Image (cartoon, rainbow, N blue to C red; front, side, top):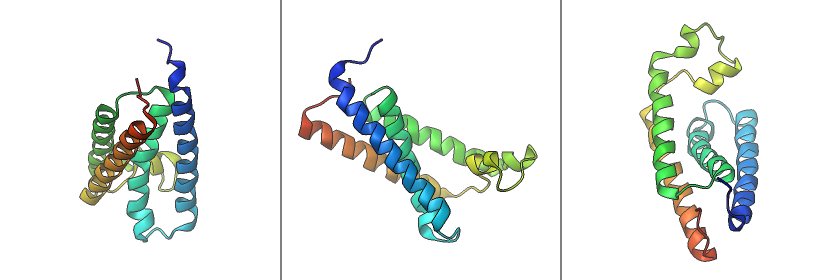
Length: 136
C-alpha cells in the first residue's frame, strides 16, 4: 500500500529526527562515563524515541498503538536481559551483540522506556494538532 503524498513531509521530518537522535545516542556512548545518569538512563529514554521516529519515518502508524508496541518491545528486551543471553551465547563484553542485547536488568530502565515513549507520542500528537496532519 502506497503512503499518501501528504505524509511525505511528516516522514521526512521523522527521518531527520531519527538521524539527530542516533547522533545524540552515539555521542552519549562516546563521551559520557559509563557510570553517569545520562549514559545509564538518558540513553534508554532516547532509544525508544529513536525507535518511534524510525517507525514513523518508514511507515506512519497511529501514535498511541505505535507507542504501546514500542514499550512492549523495549520491556521484552529488558526482561530478556535477566538471563544474560549475550554471555550465555558466548559473546564477549564490548562486542556489538553484547552491546545491542545488553547484559543487566533494571526496572528503572523500563520506567525510562515508558517516559521516553510518552514524550514521543505526546510530541507527535501535539505536532499533528498544530500542523493539522495525520499519520494515516
